[in-house]
Image 1 (cartoon, rainbow, N blue to C red):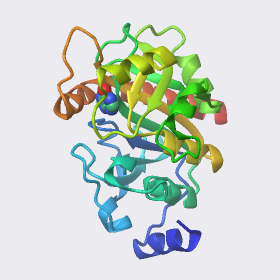
Image 2: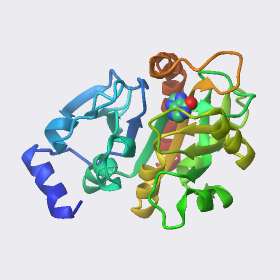
Image 3: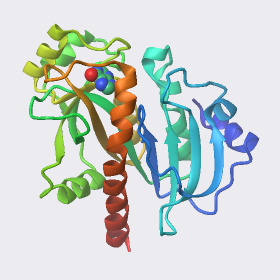
Length: 268
Ligand code: HPA
């Protein structure tokens, strides 16, 4: 997307903010945090971008408001576009491009993911420290990507998150394998990802993470583990993903509030 088009979207929506958003939060399937912030403006993705997300649990809204009990302006994006819906990476990163144009500083990317690490349990939260990118078109093909070690990223927000979870046994950290989907994984695929060192698998997040890293937005990525492959329970499909995500959201919101608070303490 070119800057002129983003500016047109901003103009058409009369989108004016009192200051640039300090934090953005992209909420994955069923993730329900910051639903009762002190809202100053709210938009539907369909009105802004002309495209409605097609997946249930991704209502597609962008809300600006103040984080609970603070004057920190945040943007909450309920839902996202996926490559498996037939969208280009340009469309997938469109909401983030808009926030970048508004001066966004930090982005927290969340997703629902399947646990591959057998020590995980559904509703665990995993801070993503590295990833495999099997989503972005790559001239070498998927097998070449998978032969390489996972990619890592550095960010001040990641450092802060790792510091906060240091003594919290309920919070995990690990490697996220981003696959194209839309089908959930076969047993063979899960086994392959396990051998490669992935701790969780999902179908999003890495395109936005790469966009943020390339565009001076400080990123952090977190998975909500909604199911564990090969675990005691069967994978119950998208409905189960949405249910578990909702349950884990309480824990996620309290972690995110802690993150914002600690961040503002360090910035001041
Ligand atoms: N695989 C891919 N995406 C997912 C999963 C999974 O097991 N669970 C939630 N999103």
